[in-house]
Length: 116
Image 1 (cartoon, rainbow, N blue to C red):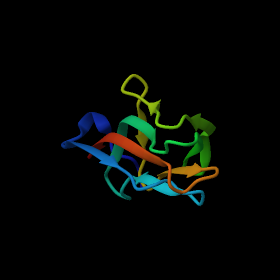
Image 2 (cartoon, one colour):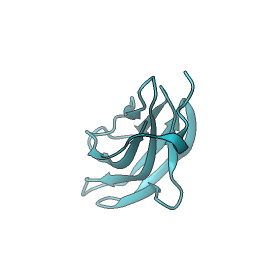
Image 3 (spheres, rainbow, N blue to C red):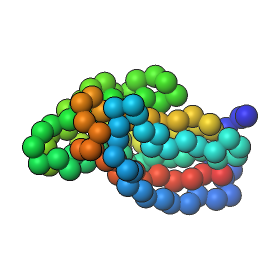
């Protein structure tokens, strides 16, 4: 499928979500639909809810690493994608996060636009 021409979009819908815990086996944060949609991610923040330890996170886009094992301190947040440098998630491509040691410390907060 070809990605839609975002300059001729007829719909731009805003969305925000908080994921469940990111796992060592990975968690799909977002997957754009297979037809006629592109997601414009304008914020991706990792949140470490642990009060005892830092956790490392790896982020992949379509199987390729964007960031690798970046530490998120205990009780802290880490901005990975911001409005200044957004990311487009093309049709049928998945954005996946993986932790290194814990399955119960990191969540992701994502704000994105569904453009079609």
